[in-house]
Amino acid sequence: MAIETFRFDGQTVVVTGAGGGLGRAYALFFAARGANVVVNDMGGSVDGKGRAAKVASRVRDEIEAAGGKAVANYDSVEDGEKIIQTAIDTFGHIDILINNAGILRDKSFKNMTDRDFDFVYKVHLAGTFKCTKAAWPYFVRQGHGRIINTTSASGLFGNFGQVNYASAKLAIVGLTKALAVEGKGSNIFCNAICPVVASRMTETVMSPEELMNIRPELVAPFVAFLVHRSTTSETGSIFEIGGGHMGKLRWQRTQCLQVSNNTPISLDELLLRWNRFNCSDPSRPSSDAAYSVSPSVNPAGLRFDGRVVIVTAGSTPTGRHICKQLASLGACVVINDSTGTGSIVAEIQHDGGRAIGCQIPPGKSDILIKTALQTFGKIDILIDNDEYPLRRPFGELTELQWESTVHDQLRGNFQLLKAAYPYMTRQKYGRIVCIFGSNVLGGNVGASEQCAAKHGILGMAKTLAIEGRKNNILVNSVSVNPEAGLSMSEDCSQHISPANISSLVLLLASDRLPEPSSGLLLEIDSRSCSTVGWQRTRGYSYPTDGNITPEMVASKWQTIVDFDNGLCDHPKTSQEGVKYVMESAFKGKRASTSKL
Image 1 (cartoon, rainbow, N blue to C red):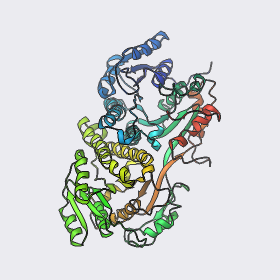
Image 2 (tube, helix red, strand yellow):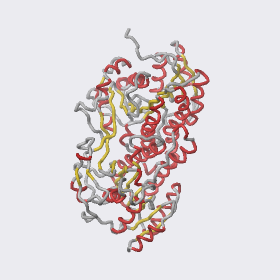
Image 3 (cartoon, one colour):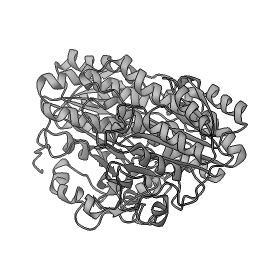
Image 4 (spheres, helix red, strand yellow):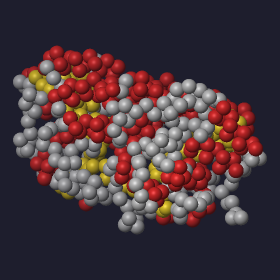
């Protein structure tokens, strides 16, 4: 028998959603390696309905029958503090938290209700937050903790009929990155995995032989390696696992265009160099490698005559530039801002433009859309502009603060898009641009709320880009230096110019955007402008007809995470996202990926 160097004797592992599938595989594996296991599962159906305590009890009984230690917990992840308290009451401490619980409520965007959105949010994102928040003080106090969060290909790339699910799953990536930054000083490591495994959803579309090739037991050893005390090289990372394959993903910028705060970006240059302004030639450029653009206000002849545009947070420096430039190019502008819009509306009207101002709160998006319709008769373009975020350390963050920031932003964004979408669908035309601070992409201290919320909005946008394309509705996102928001003064030249942001947004909102023209994430700072996409290692694939151990994972780790061997690719769709997993699992044979 091979020596088990990756043991968990005396450590306590909490696994949510552990009554079946991947959660059960985790629970059994860690128990077999010496851990105390809290088996959490309320026993609901795939769509979250019902309760059945027996599913958690059954796994606990399996563990105890094999000589392991386990306790069953039947609480919802919405009551995360109760789950963690079970670990403390039974075993005295918690060392590892695996946030695995999940449900689905798939529907096309036009048919999705607030309830569908909220239900998925509560289980996936709020549940992950609440369990982690309850475990965090114990991790900090003992100077050790490991967290695994669960994302999906739908979250990373978007997927038709899953705006709610994709939003929650990419928000989890944002939360993971923020927790990794905050926790590292306390020896708390947090990573996210994108597993492809057999589940209740795939049982109806795959044969038993196919399901064996993506069995959850092929994933658990990887996670065991990642959460072991000796593994300290990874935090804030994203991994794809399944079918014997293991690889790593990270955000990657394209070769970029160099910009200046002194003059606006040239739209002509953006159009001319658009072939370099996508993920076909990714790199991590310095300013020296960037492509310089020449100054110009509007040489491309871009006009918005007859277009009706809604701009949120329109009184911020960035919002003002966007509104004024749109109005100067013929657009009718509906400006919404909680702080008031009188001065910017007056400026536009003084210059001969058409604009109205609103102070409509996020939860009343239908009123905002109706205001645009009653005043100008239609809605063509929606620019969802971010406001400067508050920062709070995760340990000090309350549940109420989380809900008021994350849930309100995500739900408010969902409702705004939902209110505008039917009109855009009916007229077979729409442009949506979401703008947020760039500090969220890599995580930041005190930014767990914003990292989660903005990643969630990005996940929403990626999926809506897929659904809206057939009706000529293009959806893109812009990540900017946060200092360009509410806190930026006009003479703050060391920060990004709002005029540069405005020029980029106008191109995305126009009819002149070359392909690829939807589902993009663009990043702009004080020196450069680029697109951002996923870069993935080629990774390593083990045979599916045998067992995998953490020791085997350790032996191939450098291959799994190698971004420098010339074998990386840049997946853009959920199908491309599971490519290597499916190749490993099925060796080129066809298998359905619609439910993965």
